[in-house]
Image (cartoon, rainbow, N blue to C red; front, side, top):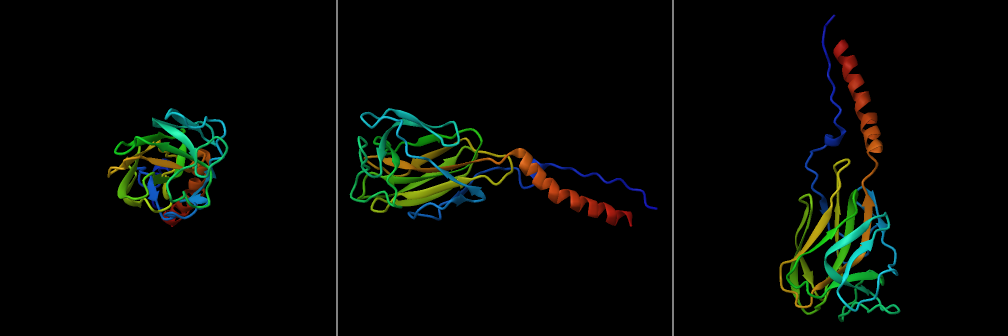
Length: 228
């Protein structure tokens, strides 16, 4: 009989490469958002009636439907893609698009300044739409995440509807903390973001159980084979 020792390492956090840069997906373009982003089912943000109408660029955070808040590095104005009650409609001759009439957050001074959006803890996926205020210009934006994910350079036409930017994690248990939106050209009147969607990182126990369900039977088969 052959004598041997078989050592099996279960490192569920690194079942795939342990460099959890978020993946970018911009495929919806200016179309309506899908219900999923990568492997995540997305929860859209409900209409925000609790924050005040604009009057000053002072809004610094927005409640998340999953708990916690989204925080803005610069004060923004709360507007609506379609005029609604006391809320100023988002302007320009080109509408926001996607049939969306909800909340947008406008930074009139974000002409060449970056805007960082800090996400709730445990965020596994997040998307937003972006539209410049000036509909007569063309330029580029670059969006990055706190864990080295990036959109690359995305061209934006002012005459288009708002454009989708989505990021999601693929490493089990990993999340990302923020996104930073950087205009690479001068947009004299700034830009707005809105139409948010978010998903949490799955429960670690669920991921570990799923990995074990795959790895344990494979390990047993290897054990039986080596005994022969």
